[in-house]
Image 1 (cartoon, helix red, strand yellow):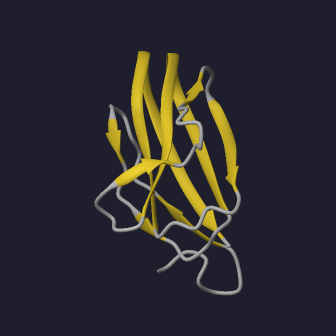
Image 2 (image 1 turned 135 degrees about the horizontal axis):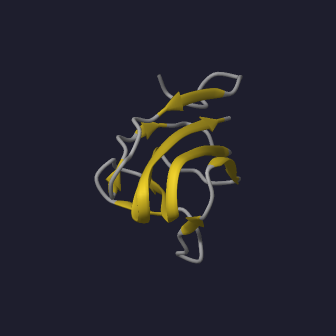
Image 3 (image 1 turned 45 degrees about the vertical axis):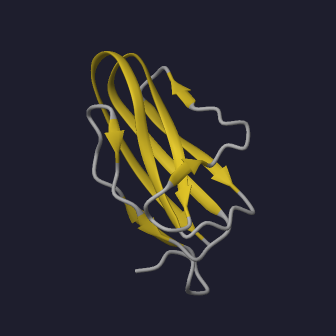
Length: 110
């Protein structure tokens, strides 16, 4: 399913990340994206990056300042990106410090 193609708000769930790496990509037609990230069993922190691509091969940081997001506590957080016309999106677990964290992520598009 292509996220954001219908008149509603579609959501897709990525496979959990437990070590540094990336999720599969999700095809999107939306320009307004909302990433939901849930972290459990955190030690010190996890660092995530929200990535986009036009060709599903070459991905880039969706943060215009090229900053990654550091999370220091268990729980669920939302990250809204508006006016972001990309074709594919994914989540990268850049690094983790301590513990055996699980990073569960979803993305919605409209």
